[in-house]
Amino acid sequence: MEFVDTSIVEQIEIKMIRPSQYAVRDKIQKGSEETETLSLSIREHGLLQPILIRPLEHGFEIVAGHRRFQACRSLRWRFVPCKIREMSDKQAFEIQLTENIQRKSMDPVEEAEAFRRYVVEFGWGGVSELARKVGKSEEYVSHRLQLLKLPDSVKEQIAQNRLNVSQAIELTTLSSSNQAELMTQVINENLTVREIREIKMALIRPDRGYAETLSDTHLSYSEPCMPKPAKIAKKTALTLRVTLTRLDNLIEEVRSTVEPNDRAEVVSMLMGMRKQIHSMIDEAIKFRNSSQRSAK
Image (cartoon, rainbow, N blue to C red; front, side):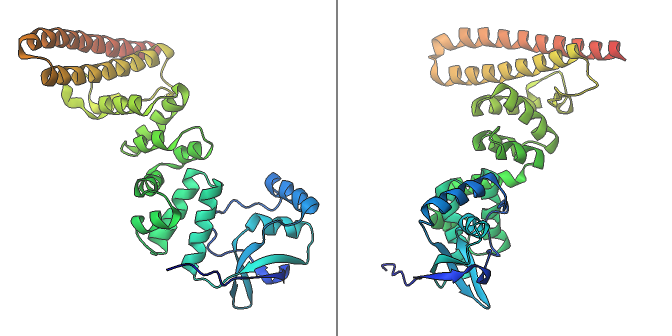
């Protein structure tokens, strides 16, 4: 069915307009630098695009254009050009969400929270329907929702663009204590998704015969009580575990791709290296423990 726009454009008195009760963003500050810049532009060129509002009891509610509204109010305008359209709460939220996504004005955590409200808090539809409404894939919406599982310290790094969504998603399957610690390493070393996965495998697969228990493999590089030599030794042990994981992948690749006549010799060579790496891990752990005891 073809969409028919039945909205009208009129000058509406500012005091009759109120912000949306379903605003997808909470960070709209009246005196922000963005609002001040917009005010200067409107003062010089006028309001180029009317504010979208909907009629409610005792006035109107903003659907799209909260910053334009704040800018006009800061200029002490009495009336503001508005596009008035009848719509439900659900439709108003969808329009706000779509506009903000298209303008890329929300960080991934803000998007995630808006998606959560749509799906869980308001119960307006599932991931599939929401993805269709905002013009994104189901995977895009699902990944955003997964970010809400992360602790606030990690979400803050995402909001500040120090951690991207792909990196952050990899942290969601770790324990809360490891999430924050691995996050620090990801940021400091700008680890790729593949490198993060390799470290995770080293952490969650103690059945490979590692000398340490899983509880000893936490990524506590920032422990204030641990002396520097011990920190280096601990990082060395983890690096060797990553190498061990890569070696295991190579062994599996050889067993599935190399001809039987050549396979035994290659596997034997790789297994010998694997044994040496185990010994190196043990040495690193012993050195770390020794350094810790000496510092006490």
